[in-house]
Image (cartoon, rainbow, N blue to C red; front, side):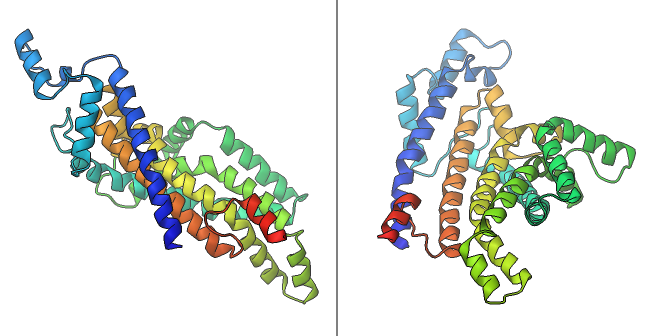
Length: 319
């Protein structure tokens, strides 16, 4: 296990550097000049050039990128051009809000999606299963911004139960509507994967053997759910990372002070240090989640050996 983790961390280095280069080049090629954020009204052309030279914006892209990497290896993510604050300080303010929101959304899709999938798998032709399938199709088809607005109108303006924007004092009620908006769109995927995997597991030989031994139906379903949970852990891990980085629309609709909204504004204003810093943090989160997911897979299914291709592993085990 330690050897596998070290190997994964070494492989993460070129991935990490490659993504920083891609993001840097994209930001460099975007139209507009970041110096515009720094230029005061009525500044002369000489003043503008002095500002560009001070921040190194007059240098070729490879020199700017090399300087960025040199600072990065010293733990310096740079200073925001717009906010005039260290990027690390900004990320430490916004990231916890996005992580909490993503965690609540994942919990929501687990609490709703998994039970619906189990019911659909155990009673595939029932009226209830048909209702669940319809519900899943609706949650997939509805755009997230539309769901957000409906939730705001219903629970914020009509019923007046929940706040519709901002984070307020940080109490739980401010998280409910944004988490619902993000989580509802993924419930259908969790339900479908759970239904499929449970249906497959219930037909496996070890389930028949368990029935032949006289195990209770509840115990048999628990074992089937454990077998079905392996692909679900991958989905939850992937969703957690996606929710943090891709919740831009939801965070914008709810004026949520999260990392996605921060990056969105930074891209519009060509605040390159913020975009680069946030991207690096998201890459680290994704790599960490993938590693944790692999370790959980090995725990759930001891036949899975870390670092081996599943197809090769089965072929080798069959010999």
